[in-house]
Image (cartoon, rainbow, N blue to C red; front, side):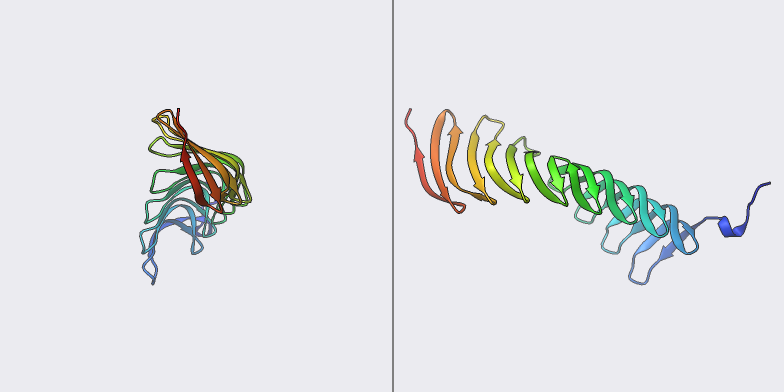
Length: 190
């Protein structure tokens, strides 16, 4: 008949913790083990696989603010391939390492910091393309609207610096920026 003993049997349990959190799912030796749902008092919820009391394997986190993460977990942390979607509709799909963005997503990430070229597409169709260094915009940036307007800019350590160009309805406006403040704004005549 095999080795069916009570020591290696997983149990399905409903647990309510003193702080108001709940767990419903498989348990072994007093720890979440297997499939389960953990709901925090504030409304945050994790649905997925557990190992030794940690989120481990494929799972989905839904936060009270409507942020959602779906992907892999290792020992309670987002780790591996996943997608996080924020309440405003923007998202990051790529690799995570110990809860941090890492690798390729909407640009390159190293230790939760943007590095290199990035393209951010907003829900309304706007697109921002730029270079990042040490998680700050550095170099040329381009913001494009669906109606054809374009804003070309230069960034240094996360601040607008130097010349910018706004092209709207065929009219170009030149701006001059110093430490993220516009010091000159001049519309060019055709």
